[in-house]
Image (cartoon, rainbow, N blue to C red; front, side):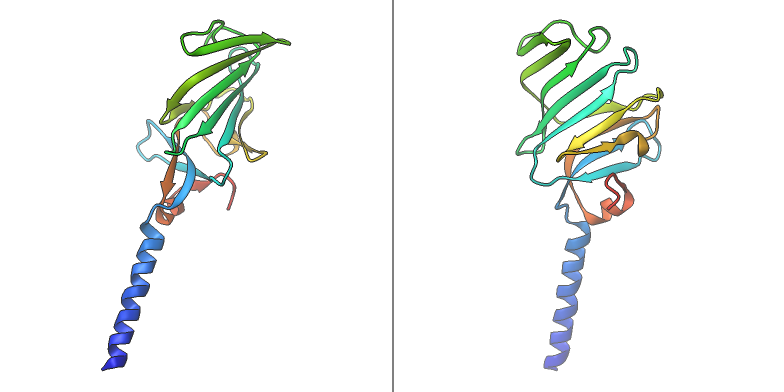
Length: 174
């Protein structure tokens, strides 16, 4: 009788741990989730201790380099720190608004934000064959190798369960 109770208890504990392992969202990730899609696909990259990252791309109109720098806050929001670019016009301002500073040095504009914290942003993957990288922990992830050209993605940080991860695509191949 005692052995049956122990076996039952062991089965219940093992099942509970399996459910926690599968469904509890403890994996902190960068998430890029398709928007305007009937069957959205999500792409994931694990977050470690580093809290800064960059999005580097070639502007589709000016065909010039743009670098956006972000910091992840303690509550997994994105603090937009600055952006650097070579040309001003569509999407690249030539002036600073309230809470911003704009500097021009050695042919590069640097727009710095005082405290612009956002939940997420939409990343559009242009059809133009130019660079688009996520730089994190001294490594560049070529997003156009994974993401569909002409599609938009909601970029945010979230805790994700293992079952959710298995349904998505890992940007680091692991």
